[in-house]
Length: 70
Image 1: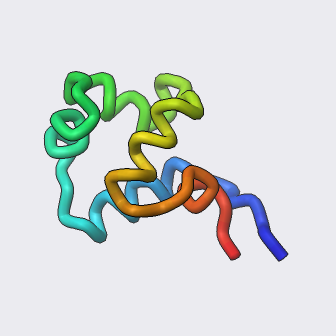
Image 2: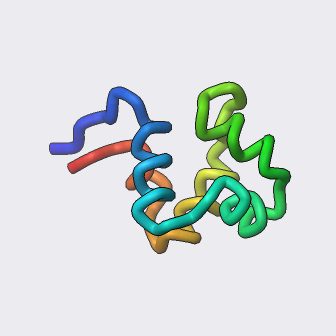
């Protein structure tokens, strides 16, 4: 059964930190500015599916893996 994560952005942060990536590392990989990525991860900007796919690819995951837990 798949459960929705209460705070999906916390999971995104945890995955980023587990992989030892900084905000700047992620911004560089996504070709966006550091401030924009920070705003995404902190809930100040909406994370759209296209960008979620790009983030998931960095970690060799599916986009749903970022927002749902088993």
